[in-house]
Amino acid sequence: MMRLKVPNGLLTSDHMRFFADTVGIYPADVGVIDITTRQNIQLRGIELQDMTELIDGLQMRGLSNVQSGMDNVRNLVGSPIAGIDPEELVDTRDIAKDIDAMITNDGKGNPKLANLPRKFNIAVSGSRDDFAYTSINDIGLRPCPNKESGEMGFNVIVGGYFSIKRVMESIPMDIWIKAEDAARFCEAVLLYFRDNGSRGDRQKARLIWLIEDMGMEGFRQAISDKYDEMFPKKKGGAAIPAQPEPWAVAAGTNTPTQPHKKRDILGVHSQKQEGLSWVGINVPAGRILPDEAMALADIADKYSQGEIRLTVEQNVIFPNVNNTKVSELLQEPLFNIGHYFIPKTDKDFPLSRGLVSCTGSQFCGVALIETKNRAIELSKRLEEELKVVVEVSSSNSVQ
Image 1 (cartoon, rainbow, N blue to C red):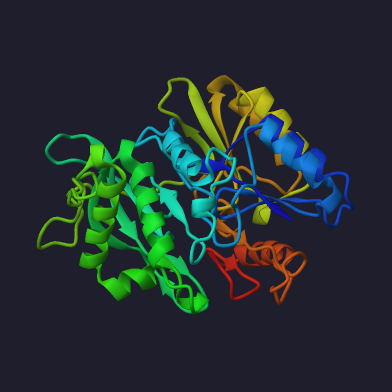
Image 2: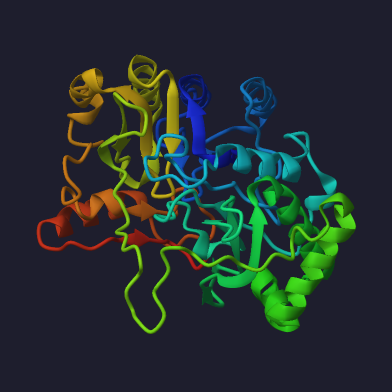
């Protein structure tokens, strides 16, 4: 298996065809493409002798697999509807790319960040919906305007993760940073974690354990000092207190001042660009076969200027579809054979639409059961009676 780096989940039709060509030469039961819960791609069935050609092909197309596994920063997650969202607060695309470029040295490899105490997750949210799920990441950047200047930046939350040891939701760091300083801030945190995080018990080596050992006040001061040391011309950039969210719960009440319900991104939705829509496609359990990848590429060329986006829920979005072409897209054969589907309302396919699944025993050495097919079958059978979201894991290793 090769895990890639796809910052913000942004792909093209050329990428998808390359993936299909790459895995399509292998037996059908192993040569597959998986969308992950970090808006990423895993190519399966790859044989060692083919790796050089694959790596060269990725680099030619602006992608890489550099520092994508082990104790590295995993794929940068952002908003799957960045730049087209009518309710967007921050366009996460360039920010995610800048952070990834800092981490990987523009895809060439960065030894100083290649041996962290433990793997590390970063997510950048672009709206109140938090499609990036910042609360389960080691660093989560949540958009919020500065109360004095009105400049849009990020309140920082830290320490979220899942493991067999604990499940931890991120906690506020009480820091606000400018959007332009996001990569610098993340670098300061990563280098401090590299030098001070625990390297003993791997079940106690994620960032939250360091924060709890130091206390949040001590950790916050250490990061502020590290930031000032690294970026003297930006001194104080990591010392601005978290800003009040204009939509936060009013004092003495349980009611947000600006109520908001998280939106659905599957199906057809109007963009902020007049006359255009995005179309969210359900990909069952995130598994794509080579011929399906080719069909997705053709559809992207035909309707979305070759652009394809991935979601944390292991689904696909076609952006910038002309409203006059939406009906035609909905009739594409790939979406009308009972496998991939485009929901017409947020009530359609209540289980399948939110289904996520890990790799399972077919490819994972620590898995106990097969998950992908079981998850799809389970969701279909339960859909007749229930309306809940199912997440299936085959092992004790998650996130």
